[in-house]
Amino acid sequence: MTNEELIVNIEKALDEIRPFLNSDGGDISLVSVEDQKHVKVRLQGACTSCSLSVSTMKAGVETTIKKYAPQIETVENVI
Image (cartoon, rainbow, N blue to C red):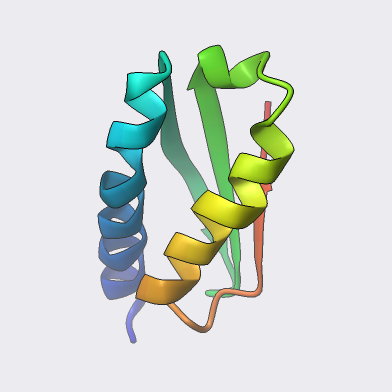
């Protein structure tokens, strides 16, 4: 998979989970993809101060991204 294809797949994953984040006043954006294995995202809005953001990252964001791009090893929220 090319880097461009990988980014498209990651954006598809983010588009899938974005409505859930939006419903709680939050959002998410892709910051970078490193070595085609490590994804950095930025939680925004209400997600930045939510006590469940760590759970959201693991259970929601990381799982969904890995569904679209199985080669991804880590997903990290950057501030």
